[in-house]
Image (cartoon, rainbow, N blue to C red; front, top):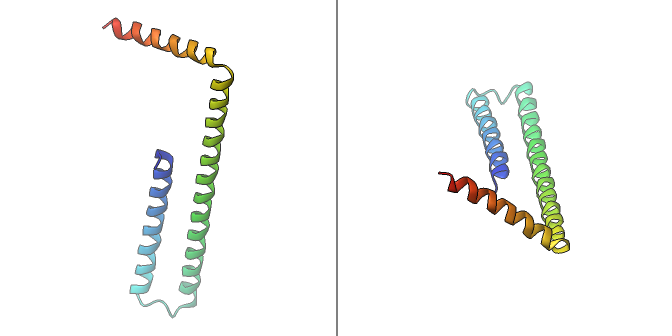
Length: 102
C-alpha cells in the first residue's frame, strides 16, 4: 500500500471512528426517540458514505495517473534508450563525485 493510500485510509478510519463514537454517544443518551437525532444520524451516515466514495475516487484517479506516468516513462526509455543511459550515467558520475568528496 502506497503512502498516499495509507494516508487516505487513515483519514477515512479516523472519520469512521469519530462518527461511530458520536453515534454511540447519541444512542447511549437514549435520544433515539427524538426525530432530530434520527435525522442527524441519517445525515452522518450519508456524509460518511459520500466521503468514502470520494476517497475511493481519489485513489482510483491517483492510481490511473501513476500508471499513465509509468507507461510514459517506459515508452520514453524504449524510444530513446541512449538518452536514458546517458542520463543515468550523468547521475552516477555526480553521485560518485559527491560521495568521493567525503
